[in-house]
Length: 280
Image (cartoon, rainbow, N blue to C red; front, side, top):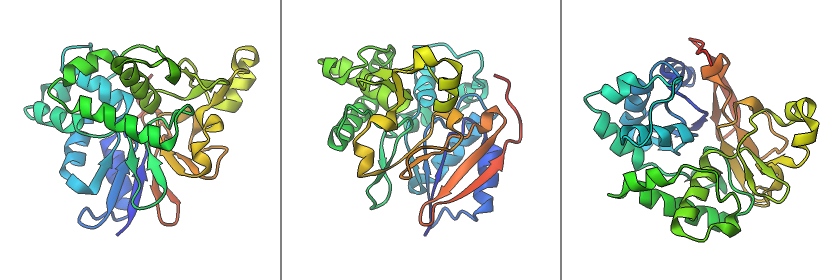
């Protein structure tokens, strides 16, 4: 059995299939961990969801911000973003089945029996590992409940961005969604920040004044000193990180780069160049 982990697919179905063919992925014995954002900007989100769902227990998924937004769109809470290619998915005969399946997926996955975890954006530096696990469970229970649409409508907004100020269930839910699916940078006091997407070196070069108080979340988290973490979401990193036990897997396939797959036992990287460039 082999364990593989893949970055943001974003509807790039043909690239995913080609990448799995490279490693001779066997759904009967292998496992595929997916770092969130299965859907949105790429050309075939419908085929992507159908394929991943068909893998059953061989697929281990965490939800990303685009996956959650899709659920909100399907529920009529939000409108489709201009750049998203979701028309076929939303009109599919099995859309309801796919959305119900997607809503059951967690925000955090433990990787096998190792002291390693995967989430879409990372782990809040204001949390211990125990807190992160508790909050992931807290949010998943609400998203998979009969009141799913109520909770989806409550997840939007950037406040509170300080865990100590999350006093109500709604505030804790919103903070948890943001930490697991939207975070890249944090302020030096560990509060979440949502405006900047550039890689750290580029951000410093382009805008020194506004970026001096910002640090990548993994520079502030004490948890990663004792765990290994795999995440997506931050395409600008292009798989590069300042910590050896941190694996950023979003390499912007949907933006014209490539899809990245990590084989877990030997940490070998496989890539598949984009088959179709999507305009931003």
